[in-house]
Amino acid sequence: MVSKTRLILSDFVVSLMWVWSGSLIKIFVFKVLGMGHDSRGEFLKNSLSIVNMFLFAFLGKVTKGGTYNPLTILSSAISGDFSQFLFTIGARIPAQVIGSITGVRLFIDTFPEIGLGPRLTVDIHKGALTEGLLTFAIVTISLGLARKIPGSFFMKTWISSVSKLSLHILGSDLTGGCMNPASVMGWAYARGDHITKEHILVYWLAPIEGTLLAVWTFKLLFRPQKQDEKEKLKGKTE
Image 1 (cartoon, rainbow, N blue to C red):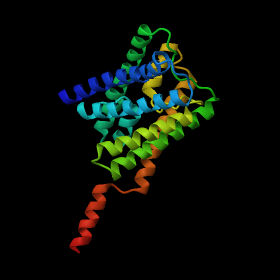
Image 2 (spheres, one colour; image 1 turned 90 degrees about the horizontal axis):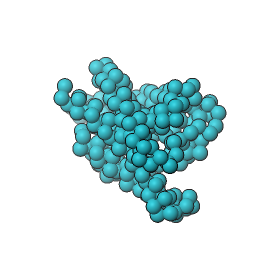
Image 3 (cartoon, rainbow, N blue to C red; image 1 turned 30 degrees about the vertical axis):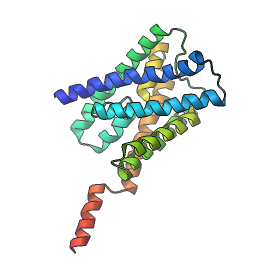
Image 4 (cartoon, rainbow, N blue to C red; image 1 turned 120 degrees about the vertical axis):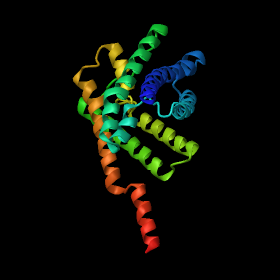
């Protein structure tokens, strides 16, 4: 019970910090350093974003699983037992959402001149397809890294960070390339459009469907490692 409570608190704090970190990077590059949205400014912002993702991957290890993205824990919850699934849906994801909303509210109070987060710039169907495909891609990559590079923190984090950044850039002009329903919920709540059809369909339903499809596809294409190891041992004994 204590470990579950600590995990919920970790999700809340890490989600709050994630909202702040992304916005602070933009303020530092474009306002403090005065760099424009040219190649140099974007390169520095993207480089700092990768460093930031390394920091949060380290925080995940320190907190023993604390994370800021509901899709990350949803993909593992789908493969786990029912009690883990209920704990994820009923406690961890709400903690991430509340952490993001709190983080955005505190950030806007501190920096009132900042914008109000990602917005949908295409029609609802294209937006849902974009977020769904981006989520499918990043979840598939994450599952593959967990299978192929189970112990290498640096290499796994490097590939994951570059992949997330690349997919974010691909979708940034359409939906914001978010792949994180909790973070988007924080900004949408601040704008007052968190219960609109566009928000729910594009930033919640589509990513969740992309996650489910990625997990099920991965299960069909790749057998669990324990099953592979058992078959290898069986072959050797025979």
